[in-house]
Image (cartoon, rainbow, N blue to C red):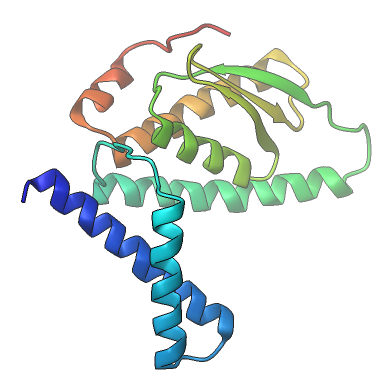
Length: 184
C-alpha cells in the first residue's frame, strides 16, 4: 500500500470516527447502539458526499504557532479595550474605512487563518479575499486617515508572516522576504 493511499485511508477513517462521535454527542447519551448507528451513518455520508482531495502542504511549527497564538490573544484583549473605549468615549464618531491590503501568500490555508485572525479581533472584519490579485479587503473601525490605514496594512503583513511561519513550508517562509504581490 502506497503512502498516499495509506494517508487517504487514515483521513477517511478519522472523518468517519469524528462524524460518529458527533452523532453520539447530538443524541446526548453514549451507547453501543448510538455509536454503531453513528458509524454506519458516517460511512454512508462519506461515500455519498466524498470530500475532495486537497493538499494542505506545510506543517505546524510549534514555536512559531505559540508566538502567533500569543500575539493573537494580546491583539484580542487590546482591540477589545480599544473598541469598548470608542463606544463610550465622548466626542466625534470614529471614521471607518474599507482598506485594500496586499498579501504575499496565495495559500488557501494561510489566507483562511489570516482572515479568521483579522476578523476575530474586534475593530476589523475581512470582507473579501482575492488570492489571484494578492489582495485582502477589510472594513476597519477608526481608520479615517492615511496613517491609520497604513498601520492596518502593516499589521496585516505582520499577522500574515506569523501565520506563514507557523504553518508554512520553507518555500512559503522564503516568500516573506519578497514584497507583496499587489500594491493597493
